[in-house]
Image (tube, rainbow, N blue to C red; front, side, top):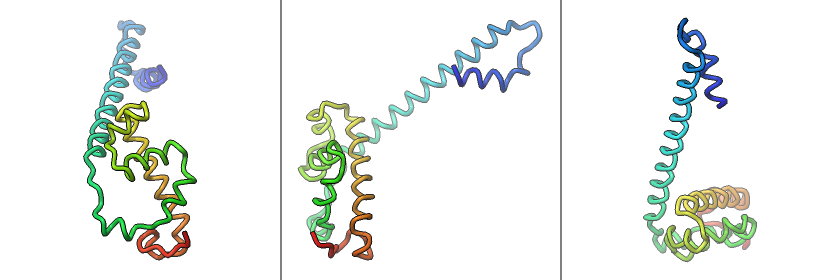
Length: 145
């Protein structure tokens, strides 16, 4: 409704004399509703594609896992429990995104969003925790565990 009112205000000069103002406004309202649902549909498709991309991610090689900061275990305790659970199940245990979604009782799209946010929160927290002790933040970390 709000966007329809805004459009009507912007396009008020488009109302032709002799044209019904209510019919003109309902046409603007109908177009605003159609635009709203189009946007939601496109956003849903984008999230579904993103969930599929995350589900097919590959695991890092063992050498990379060796040099990654071991502060992760300490930092994960500070994350929201849902984020820590998502990371443990998907990244540590190697479960697929679909399996995690099923076990958590959420949709695959919601699981993809949760894992993405959890990874971002973990990254931010690791940079805060380790950024002062190692020049490359979390590679070859020398932090006291």
